Image (cartoon, rainbow, N blue to C red; front, side, top):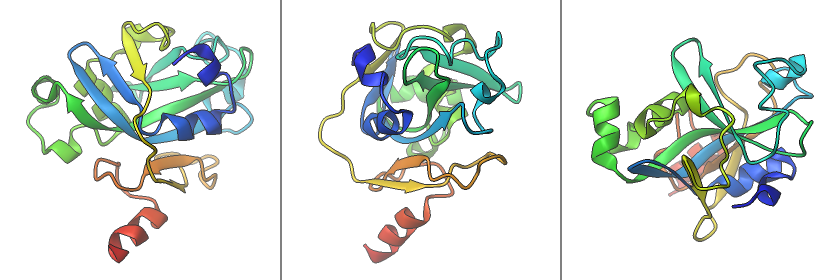
Length: 195
């Protein structure tokens, strides 16, 4: 996964990250849910322009934007588009694939489906903190993003947990994963009922 992968529309990058694997240290998970954010809409941190906090968002594509949410959880984002454009993909949920016991130690004992079913949960499970803000996702260390094997069935929905621009359908989920955070997108709920 090189910088060219991330140097595209943030929405394309978001769709293409679903199914990829994120690894940090002894733990890894397959991405099953993401949201895209762009500086032209008010839910994006970059909407306010270039500041000390948003500098990473306007930096090179393929870097990690890790920030603390509500002073509690570190959230992992992949900076996208060209340098100078504030855009990133929030990694919202993972399906654990390696290091499950390490994840459980970091998070406490939880059902597997809930271990990484939220952006704060997954960073805690992987041991990712704000000190990794600005590090490269393309060099394989400390956070590695591996290409997906196969093509997941992706459903879209509105982003959750925000109040501004909450109507934009920029949430992308693996329709067949039970590790997606709740509430599931309407299309995903319908597919589950029909199955």
